[in-house]
Length: 440
Image 1: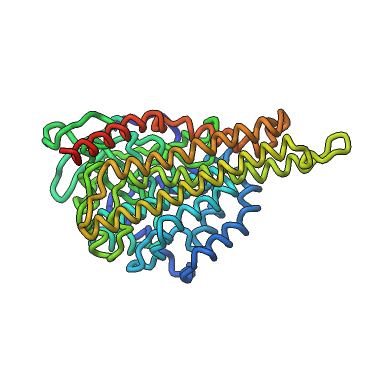
Image 2: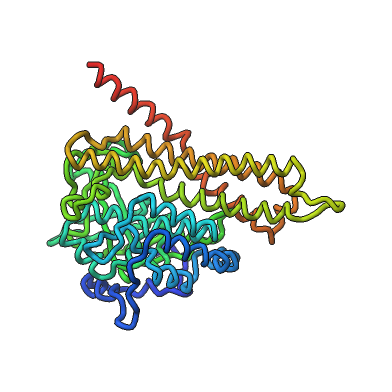
């Protein structure tokens, strides 16, 4: 495969030495004997840890942006605390906490550093899909290597190829926006299957398009050093990943339709007897970004309070009704965004429970409605950020101001292609389709 000419990432992490043997790479992902195992933590203990880590995260924000991803020290601190075990099944040494608890942890980390919150959400969060859709054998290999699971997952692919070979596939391609890939022991990619496979095609980029998903361990791919120069979320580790003719065993792949309804058990819900692992992917993928947005919003509230703690002409800014109003309006929006995000998680659990018990399908319309909630939460945080920036004045836009960093982060988060304005068409269409089916 032709090299794009970009330098590979070489700072702090070593993901890039080519290891063609899959089994060897999995062994390398296993924890070292000298690493103590985290004891089981409650969500309150984990949130307290994140709160205590907050000053360090804030001290490291500038370096995180310059580096393009969180430091090895931050990664290790989160790992030692058990933060990467929240969604890992108990069967494999994980905490198997509800999805809402994971979002609360993302919010807490994002309040310390929005980039780190995004990196964590889009790495650790994919334990849910692995535990839901892959077989027991594959889960045993992946989680058995270490319950501290993290994997970036990108569908933004170019120059891809996939070839059927004995026992699996040969895969090549470049995947952009692989958020969370620095420090992650795995990468997950998605690509369109060749037309000759006869899996159908509903249009590139739609939920209904058939997708080949695969997971490979670090050492079998190259991470490009092509992040950190964006407007915001510069430290989120959303690097591109290059996969060059890598053999992927059959059991490490999925042929999936992300909109196909779930009715009955998934491999994961049958294995773990937990409905959390019986949900539809489109009802969860935007939850991590929404939680990261809420964390960034709370960080902005903290920064705004610092700004108005100063005095002008002997009068504290915090005593001025103008600043109190801006703060109150922003808090109302961010609190609402947090409530919406956590309610999205609760609905995901409720729909998955009914699907697992074969009471009603977790279908595309239900997933899209939750997805719309998450996008609405992000929009509300963006609106709150406008209030805070206008209230703080031009001083908040100086390079040294944390508030300008959070403004850049939220603006970037809400400038992606998959925004509510685009999703709303699908949400409305699916609602009308389902309504029509009920009336027939």
